[in-house]
Image (cartoon, rainbow, N blue to C red; front, side, top):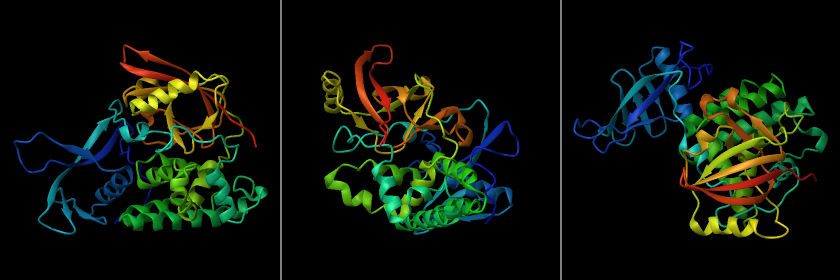
Length: 359
């Protein structure tokens, strides 16, 4: 296996192309009668496979399957007769592969339409700081001496989460990349965390699944169980050393979502109340400044006007720069301003006002 982590999932040696490894998802992947069901490997899998390919290696080992680069097949580790075709695709700089899973999941809690209004420091971060026995003056952006220790705990937590869902190979590679920044200072660590978060991996998925449960009594044990494993990484990502100022007031962000009719009705009812109640996003929320990107996903479009809010523009850290991803930080409060129906896009438009509440 190659050891370098320098190649991003979107990059090849030609700066105007990017490489994407894909696998055939058809029921009979070798049939010439079925339509091509090619699916991309995840970002971290793509990195691992491409590194091995460039190093001239012939086999890549994952938890559930191996990749035979010589014969271009994916082989199940449980049954060697179960094989699927794979291929390496070079994409031009104008080719776009927008990720539905990135911008579609419901950004609010699963069993209630909104989160409670929290302060500047969200509950998951508060509990992580308590778990790590840190003081306010010991946050990594304020105290560089504790950064290596938190990075190591973040790496170990990612590996533990990966082992629990049979993604140890991916987890170890992510942890390796994070550890490489341990002695480089908080700015390099944060940039690494932003890049890792931009990947479509279990880290992005599991962290946000847990944080969206905050405020749900039924699921309190679920999110609290992730503080020890995903909390350190979450703290490193949240404590952005570059973010000394809030986003420019009036900035518009967009987010698609797939909502039930009942939930849409709750949004409508909420904007009719006087005064309009305050709520908050519990998790990191992937948005975009490009409406054309967000409108492609879901049956609802959130249009968010930032009044006072902390965000991070992670486009330059992402292998998918065409998404123009802007990360809305957890704990940002909002009110529902109005709900309209867009006949052109055939979906409701939910206008919200973002306004961070200080502790």
